[in-house]
Image (tube, rainbow, N blue to C red; front, side, top):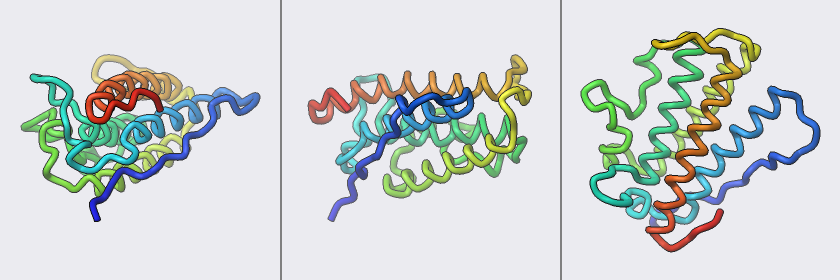
Length: 174
């Protein structure tokens, strides 16, 4: 039996009067689930399909990319964890390896690593308040900004995922 991307339960972002942090966490969880939902029911070959040349973007590549982005922002920049211990797919010699090297790890294992990256990101973020400084190479931001950036990053990539999924099997809604 061929592995297929599992069904995803998506959180409800319209769940009452939430405080700021809960609202940010809820929206981020919504878009995390939205990306995976675009992959539901597809097999590894379908997940590797690219949209149009010369783009290397694929659904599997997006999941790999976001696993690295989760670790980068929450574990490395926010929590100051060792960068080498956090890298999963991106490589120094190929910054786009998360999109380019799709045969390096089975899709089922990519899902497990994505789930682990999200869990590590949540654990790292839970240690700090929203005003915690996060230093990047170009600016110092705070954890609140990181949440908003991650929501934006997921939303943008979910748009990419819409086009990819439509090309694969015609599905146009989540």
